[in-house]
Image (cartoon, rainbow, N blue to C red; front, side, top):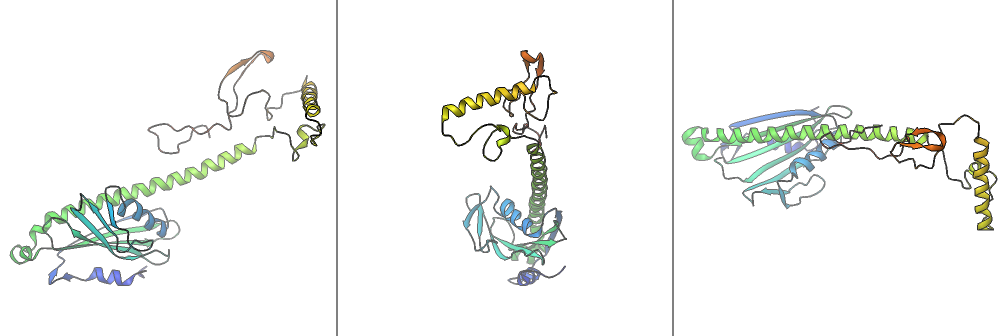
Length: 287
């Protein structure tokens, strides 16, 4: 795929010089992330461009925040998004930025991030950068003083991309666990039998009148209905699909039940998930 959402931005990045000075140094990193192009773009914007160590001086325009300016160190570092090609999941989305202020020996820097769709739920993120030396450095030293700056930029960008890749993988895994958790929870909820009588399930108390003409009469009927149901159960096999004890479903405990002469361990099918410190997020036990 070679078609860009913002072709002009890519063409501008390919320009080989600025103010009569060539971009002598260039680098590129790439990594594949398991999300769609639009998701990768939004996550990069949130976790890289809007990272915690930066503050926005200018919000920019649209979802791509074109024209936004971020700063760090009280304004010691200032960067701006020059051009953005917001994703459509068909063409290559992009974000081009440049450094406005950074007290290091270079004349100009421009970075270009490409979000290249690789099919369903896969995007190749390619992060490139170009560096032009100071005029005195280029004329007298051939741009050698730019090498330490290039090394710094390569290290920082590589670290940003590695952290971004891990973050996306982590969020994707959490999303899968969310789906698995929901599926298991729905399966367990489907096993719960209704224990509250009402107009939609009168079979729980079939001889109870829900007209509520007499509250006391209905209360008495409830007691009679419960007693009758318990009498019928005498001598019958226990149905383990039905709650047998006056214990709420979410209770987690083990106790001795004297009248039945047995130890009771409730199923706890409504118990909230346990989250352990140090484990990955949403590592659920008991499901």
